[in-house]
Structures are given as C-alpha cells and as structure tokens.
Image: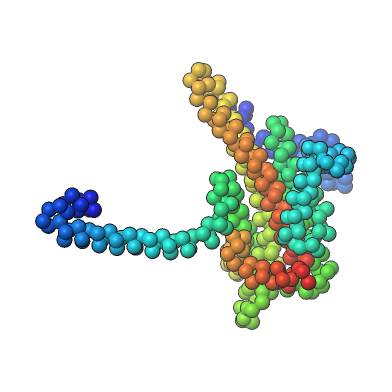
Length: 133
Length: 252
C-alpha cells in the first residue's frame, strides 16, 4: 500500500492518496505498538515462570509429565477410595461415583498447585513469615 | 521373528539369585535386590572415600561430594527452612539412592531398580509416612489443619476437606508413578531404537546405511536419559522436601 502510494505521490492525485496511506500506516503502527505493549505487560511474568520449561524439550517434557501424573494420581486415588468405600459399606455405585468426582477435583487441584497457579500464594506468604519465628 | 531376540521388556525381568523362602513368603535375593545393594555400596563407598582426605582444598572427588551435599542442603533449606535440616540425612539418602540407581541403570546389562513401581512406591510411602508420623507427633491434631484451608465457608468445608485429603493421598501415587514411568519409558525407548540398529543391520548394505539414523537416535536418547536420571532424582528429592515442609508447618 505504502509503496504504491509513494511513487504516485509525485503526481497530481498524490497528496491525498499519500495522506490517506500515511494515516492508515500511523494508525496501524500505533495499534501495533499498543498491542506489543499490552502483550509485553502480560507475557513476562508468565514467561519467567516457564523459562525453565521452555529452555529444553527434555525439561518441557518433564513438566508435562509432572502435571499429567499429578492429575491421573488424583483420579486414581479417588476411584480407589470409592471402590474401597463401596466394598466396605455396600453402597455399590454411589461411593465410586462420588469419589471419582472428588478425585477429579483433587486432580485439578494437584495440577494447579503443582503449576504454581493456585493455593500457593496465600500459603506461601504465610509460610515465608512462618518459619523465621 | 526378531521379537524373541529384541525384547524391550526383558531388561525389567526379575531373576532369583539366591532363593529364600520364609514361612510361605518368597524373600529371595533377586537381581533387583543385588542392584540395590550395589547402589548403596557404591553411593556410600564413594562418599566415604572421597571425603576421607578431608583436605581444606578439596580434590576433584571430594569436590563432587561437597557439591552434592551443598546442593541437597540448600534445596532442603529453601523448601522447609532451617528446621527442615533435621531431615537432611533422610533426604540426602533418598536423593543419592535414586540418583545412583537411575544412573547405574543406564549401563548395558544392568538392572534399573527404579523402573519397578513397587520400589518407587515403597520409597514414596516411606516419605509420606514420615510426614504423617512426624507431623502428628509434633503438632498432634494440629497436623490435620493441613487439610483445612483458611477462609473457606462452612458449607463448602466437607467438600474442600475431602478434596484436600484425596489430594494428599495422591501424593505418593504421583511421586512414585513419575519416577517409575520416566525410567521405564526411557529404557524401553532406548532398547527399541537400539533394536532397530540390530535388525536393520542384518538386512545387508542398504540396511546398514539405514541403521545410521536409529544409531544416532540411540546416542541422543542415551544423553537425554542421563539428564532424565539426574532430573528425576532432583524432582523426587525436592518434592520430598516440600512434603516434609508440610509436616513441619502444617497450619499454613
């Protein structure tokens, strides 16, 4: 667009066309800068946490494996507990169903906690002030 | 055809070396037990010999021991504070055992102790058992505050507490599954690629040329496995530290 506008700028219809192209360019440039700024404000704190994960595929693979095993462990323990409760109390499908759902919740809690997205902020703050006393 | 020759699972087979049967239980000394003994002897032997000199300016070997000590000590101090240092022998033993077992398993014809889930599960049960026993011994019923997050409405309490309890119980499972599956998957992958080299090499000139690719792959995976072996030992140890922190400060 701009390249088309510039050579044509020597002609009679040039100024108007160039002006329009410039305005559009400036607008685009401004929006691009805004986007970059808003992305920059958003990305770094996330990237810094994941720096280790992105450093190498092996470490990233380790991270993925860690999260999935946390999730699966939660569900597996929920199912196991439900099965045992059913065996002992004879409440056949109900224990399994309820504990499977609870296990699902525990799995998600595990993943979020292990990824450092939940539960740590409040806990960690108290923890930091705690051990010194 | 080549299935009996190149069997990626064969390396995990447990063989009885000295059969011992006590009261109907099979307590035989197996290759797994043999390698556990080797791991313990190797790890403690290395640490004893390398620190025997006690030089002020350490030799290379002494340096390695000291760096391992510093590494585990700072890890534990960061995760559980200075009070956590009473668990240092425990954490250091677990770290050394897992790391040496993982690395030893990389040698051809060696048995990988940590590739069996019962071994890693026993280790993680030991850790979580320590957390529970020490936590209750030190804090009494206060230990169970671990399962009660602060600022939760009373109505939601049963739900949240049961989820927290399941989450706590899933720790030994995820801890053991992670270590075991990493070791198992890595060794199977390595064996499969190495098996490709052998079976392609038997196909003549074209096969030998084609075998270069899996050979390169096997070399690269071996390097990756060394990294994974050390990394998994580190992850195992740092999670141990974090769980021990719960035993020390349950009410956070």
